[in-house]
Amino acid sequence: MNDRTERKTIPILDVNEASNCAGSEPYALMVLGDSMMPEFEEGEIIVVEPSGLVSNGSYVVAYVNEEYIFRQIVKRDGGWLLKPVNPLYENIPVADITVAKGVVIMKKRPGRRREQKRYI
Image 1: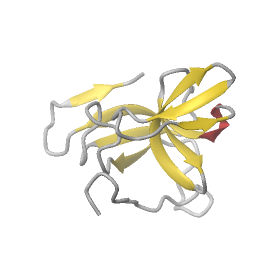
Image 2: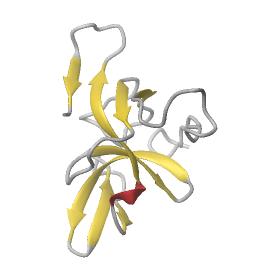
Image 3: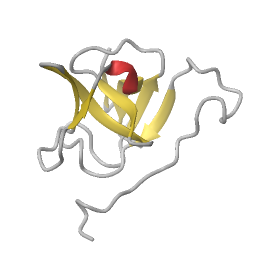
């Protein structure tokens, strides 16, 4: 498999299965793959707000096709799309924003204290 088609996943436990963290507490994930480049590079850390306000253009962690995925949610005629930033990947049509399980509020490059970007 080439790098673009190889699937890299880290299992994300449902809040009820996870630790004692409340469902509304932010959590951090590492970006894997290149589907969200150039905005999000592999290895960057994103902070996700589970109770964040989802709006057109938000970067979200969504649950579709029985897996979690990191994409931008975009309003289109008749519904919504989960859109990768990298045009080499396909959009995923979704009926509504309820697939979004959290909104990205910040990204940070590990080891670089000053390199961070907020999305709220």
